[in-house]
Length: 94
Image 1 (cartoon, rainbow, N blue to C red):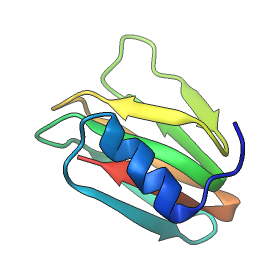
Image 2: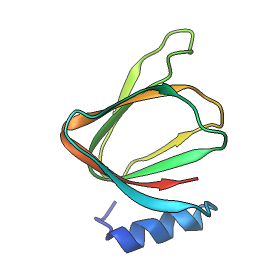
Image 3: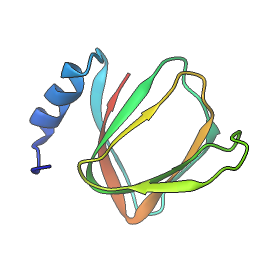
Image 4: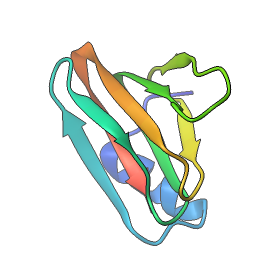
C-alpha cells in the first residue's frame, strides 16, 4: 500500500462506511488494558506498529500490524493493545 496522507487515510476509512473518523497518535510502548467498544471499530495504521490480543479467546495470541494494515474489532469484543517502541499513528473509524 502506498503511503497515504492523513487526509487520504481518513477519506479511505470513511469510504468503508464509518461516520466518526479521526487520527490518533500514541507514544512509544503505550498500552491499553482489556476493553471493548459498543460498535465495530477499525484502525488503519499510518506509522509505527500496533499489537493486539483478544484475552477472552480460547487461546489468546498477539498479532502485530504495521503501516497500511487495517485492523477491525467487532462490537463488544474485549481486546488489549500495545504500541511499538516507535509509537503508532493510526486512523480510527467508529
